[in-house]
Image 1 (cartoon, protein in one colour):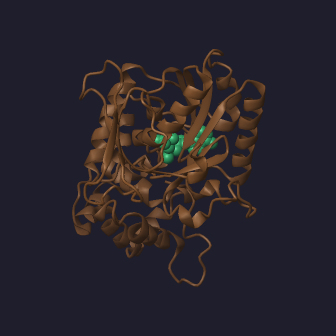
Image 2 (cartoon, helix red, strand yellow):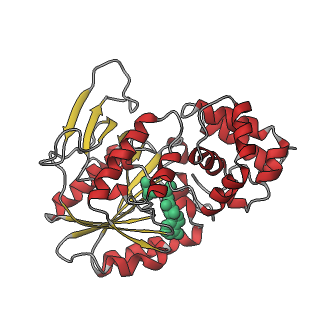
Image 3 (cartoon, protein in one colour):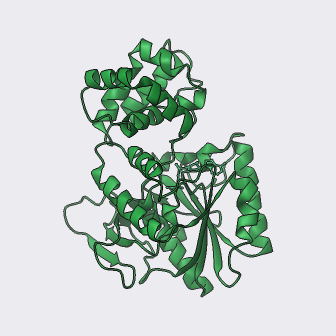
Length: 366
Ligand SMILES: C[S@@+](CC[C@H](N)C(=O)[O-])C[C@H]1O[C@@H](n2cnc3c(N)ncnc32)[C@H](O)[C@@H]1O
């Protein structure tokens, strides 16, 4: 998802950088999520002719997920690499066009499950409904936490929720909505997560994205589906249900850089609601200076008009380019592919990257 080349800077290997990138994706990122992508990506790493073609694209367009999603967008089916390679050859011009015009903009409604406890406790503490402003919103599907259903499974000490049935389940549903008309977001929680008794009220929702995707545009919807990894049918189904919710009441999405648009969009939020600025899986796209500029703008906003800030991000929010950390109390090694959830800059939980788990930090229980 990140445009950062994880292989960059690795010395002592004879393998070209792009091949290393695909090998890493195929052996580290894909296994457990998509066996098909694991096979394809590893095989691409060993296919010098294809690597040569990929290297004709700008650096940030060479990332494995972008090529694989472009192929899926154009109809590639789960298959052995030999068939996939034939597909790439016969569709290469269209794949190139898709790669050069699209970006990795996975929009995961499931992340609302890990944001919900914080949103609910902010709404309860402030005693007012919420105005939500998401930066890096993609199609804005995370702007509807009040319109989705939830199933939180509490399993002591086991965030994966697979310890054989001792689980307690907390269910929440949007008021008045018919079962089946909304996605149910399932999340395994490690106590003591402050789960709300009801969903918070949201009176305004808006987002910023470099390239907002439109839930009413069939090509944008097909692209969002192509970004879901092939075997993850439950995520594709959840995406379709979330898109149906957003289509019925599309959010306000502003095109532009989050640092340029934040203050003017925040000024449009109703003053009688509690403004929450939030983001998930976005900070990896910014350099350290961009992240610092954003943090300082949110701080200024909080001082000037009052707002809360939720950050749900991977290790890039922890380790800064200069080696310092914005959350020195949290060891990077505890994250292991998960996200750190910060409320107003304070670490409160470690979250599954697609909202599938939530481990509340003891120190944040109050
Ligand atoms: C991986 S997607 C995550 C989308 C959404 N936050 C979610 O959790 O489902 C990251 C999004 O951030 C957007 N983005 C990246 N850099 C940005 C910037 N400087 N300003 C605004 N949006 C940006 C991308 O266009 C993309 O849609």
